[in-house]
Amino acid sequence: MKNLEIEDIKDLQSIELLKALHILTTDGKINQDSRRKLKQVYHLFNFIEPLLLELQAQDSEMTLVDHGAGKSYLGFIIYDLFYKKIQKGHIYGIESREKLVLDSLALQKRIKFERMTFMKTTVKEASFSDLIPKKIDIVTALHACDTATDEAIDFALKKEAKYLVLVPCCQAEVAQYLKKNKAKKLIDPLAELWRHAIHTREFGSHVTNVLRCLKLEAHGYQVSVTELVGLEHSLKNELILAHKIEGPRQRTSDRIKSLLFDLGLQDLENRFLN
Ligand SMILES: C[S@@+](CC[C@H](N)C(=O)[O-])C[C@H]1O[C@@H](n2cnc3c(N)ncnc32)[C@H](O)[C@@H]1O
Image (cartoon, rainbow, N blue to C red; front, top):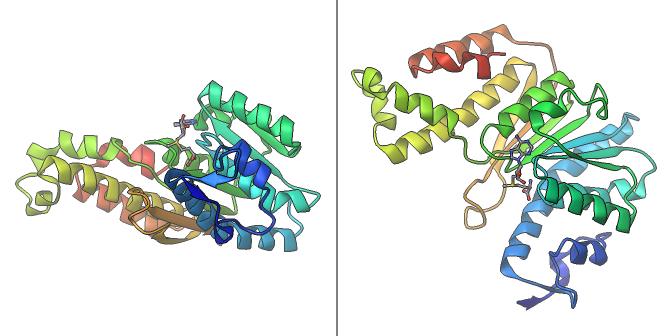
């Protein structure tokens, strides 16, 4: 356990909030895991803050939905660093585990972050909730498990989100389909890319993120992919940023279709071509 170092903490950040989130101990110390988590959330905030400033300049509603919120570190810290000082905007935390939602609600009440809503629901169901506006400005998902990231993308498309900030977790669905069709595809030398089980998993994960980016591009988003933090901090480290700039692009949909065909993944057209 280390003493808190001032360079670890951003200006404006409430120390009380960090204690309430158990990132800091009651006597203000921080352990390695919490330091890593804080570094990750701050790094993500560095990407999100310019989007918020852009939205603020456009006088937008400043709505943000965080999917697979967990303990809602991200939502609480974004609120503390940005929303607290402005008089508008709303953050929604979507989480399927009741205990985590109840804890977030209790903390929200304590620290009076009024423009936050925590919902015990799945990402999929959240698309149909009357509590969430028809349009949302920013959709985030930090390590939302498996296909929750895909569902967050569908949510964002339905809500016409201007920006997405995604750090995907492991995804097993594509690997499952690669595995299912392995024998059939092995006549093709390309299938060497995923012949061994560990390669099926890793290649499946890579293909998933490639298809996610293409799907967003097909819907008119400008996409960039970068590292969240150095690999020593987290194994799931890919950060996908998307900004809606134009209408649908048929040529990109055609590329998704042919990629799925080449990989024997036509059964996943509903996932990536909707
Ligand atoms: C690995 S945790 C990440 C939590 C948080 N975003 C963070 O980075 O600290 C993933 C969270 O997503 C939630 N989750 C997984 N699938 C979900 C779904 N389909 N709908 C809503 N929440 C989901 C899990 O319960 C878990 O709390």
